[in-house]
Amino acid sequence: MEERFWTEGADGARHMTAENGVIVFPYPAGILHGADVWREKNVAQRWRSVEMSERYISIQDKIAILAYSVAADRGDEPTYEALCTSTYLKDDDTWLRLTHQQTLVD
Image (cartoon, rainbow, N blue to C red; front, side, top):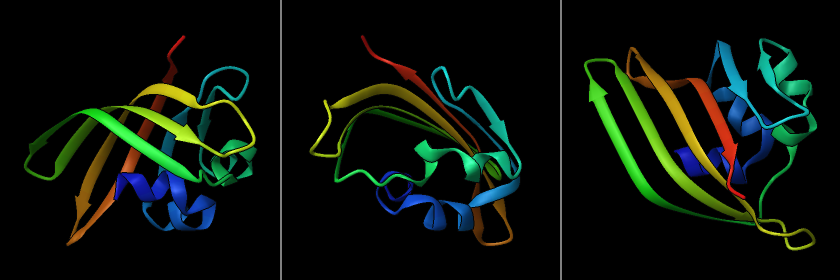
């Protein structure tokens, strides 16, 4: 599910994100929430390939926390490398992403 956020673009991500979700991108995008998330150009762009490693998941009742390292490629730009975390809430039978954060790897 997390990989789909990277590869399906904003429309797919919007359906899997809580209405009051918060996303933190590296500068200059910064902290985005509400409708601002979907106006940010970095959310709308799809990645051609995504490789996740160092995956960690912690699930407590209806909350799941994911942490991972990602290397994403669009083909026409250098590989994007970041450390990421996402928090999900299980609402009925659906997992919705509440937060997502990316820290660039130098």
